[in-house]
Image (cartoon, rainbow, N blue to C red; front, top):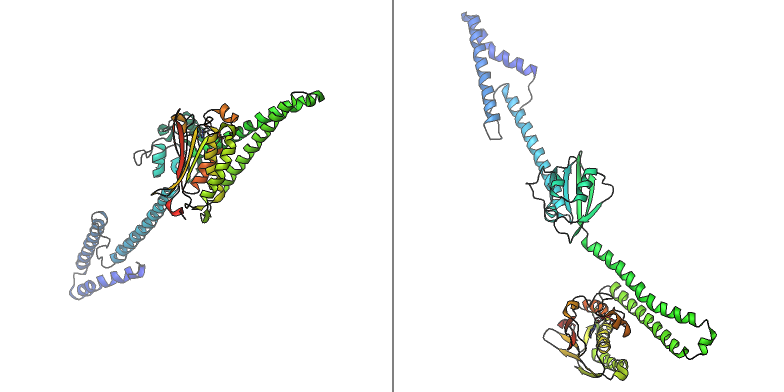
Length: 431
Ligand code: ADP
């Protein structure tokens, strides 16, 4: 380890250098000339060392300095140490930046860093996808030049970042984005952009759901109120109108009851965690009961009901949910099929697993409605559905109950010919 330079060391070095010349000059004469010669030699040697140092600093790529001698050695080594320290710091800093960038890349949101004048410093990959930015091409570009939506331009111009900005994506108007901006380093801002399309859709669905429920309840309530007001007149209660009024009131009440019941079933299935599918469900016995209930529901419309059931085919699953799913499909067939038409229910084994098919010869469903039938309150013919006492929730219940059993509802329908509603449970659920 070479020590640093000191006055003492320099003085000793000079003394050692001049001493031999001094002795020679003193013994043989010509001392001034000898001292001058020695000083010139020393100057040349120093100049040579300077050139070596400069060559190493500017030309040489190697980390190790040239081997300096004498008083230059500590200088060479000192510079080398300094350089090594700087390299280490640079490496640490580069690691830190890499870690930050990796962290920002793994965020589920788009991140853009920009300066207070709006010029982009950096953005992650998600920002490139979501906002159409390109790195490093867009480095230094003004952010408002690249996201050219009027709301965004004034958001950046006003620089009031207390409230997040929500707007339609400038590259895909079907998507809604939320921009949150916060101060980052000095003179820099960090913008986090989230795709909130789904959240907005859910919000809309929730609003629609409440509007639908209120609307569904209001209609029977208005009818009930009307009749109740009529009963203020005592003559009405004993008059000939009463049996009809009583009948309508009872019917409206059962409509409300069935709506509330369906709502409760749906919320129970939706809120429930995916059930453990380890209970034996006796689907043939369930279908046996359902056949009788369907007959009763059909009443004097006398549908021709055929139940073709594999009596040995039991499954693992959730009893309540499977009953809800199957009964809704069977009741729908009865409700939406004209009198005396045929309805067939089949429960059988397939290669993929147990399958239920409910086929009717009813009015059928136009193809444009098929995708939306399982939405809550969606009906093809609102007036007709209400007439038949439908709540519009039946198929939503079916969809949820089936998804808890890893199955999907398949709908095939032809207008005027009839419809088939079917599902196949996974083979692993066969008992
Ligand atoms: P609803 O209580 O009105 O029957 P669902 O969710 O069970 O509600 O069904 C949604 C809509 O799907 C019904 O309003 C009806 O228009 C249509 N639909 C369901 N099942 C049948 C069927 N078997 N035949 C014809 N249309 C049907």
